[in-house]
Length: 212
Image 1 (cartoon, rainbow, N blue to C red):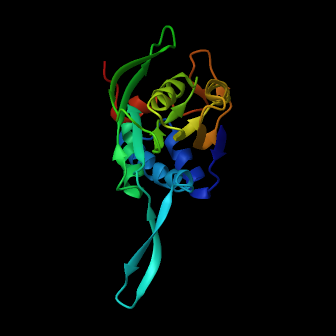
Image 2: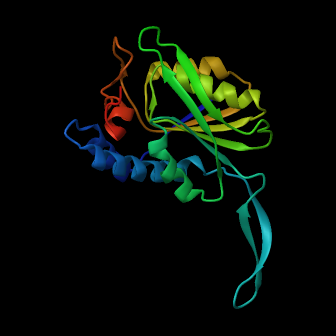
Image 3: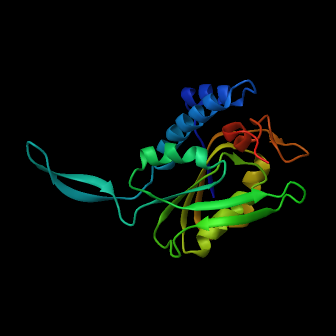
């Protein structure tokens, strides 16, 4: 597994506003969208392309376009939805799948309540989007879901990652697949409630409000 923490002054600036508890939901959503687009440039650096011949108004030439099969973007519901538009803006031809997962606040175990994915992901580059890599259990479950369907090239895009979650993911995935995590920041630790410190709070609640 490879971890890439994006290093850019615009990412640092937007993340500082995102962390601020006074930032309202509307601004938070906009900043998440902008941050994901910046992270997507890093995450798609190795996206597969193929050579094609085209004709410009002046002459014929060789160019490169995204190769088939098309990449697939997989947001983890619900917070991952706030990152979807930023990804598809950069990869408009990508397909979109969905995974509904939530953490049981008492046991911290991951529960899957919905999925919409192709049965066969062999040869597909998969991009999983979820704002927070905290304990790592949700991302492990999501990536295992993709691997069970034949995926071997998975990139996870997160806003913030905790050391504990990174270690959990690395131990769980091992050498089974090529997995990369792209994040805007690697934070200090998890607290006793498994929240990232300093973090930014509950990303889903800050994106959409508290829904019981």
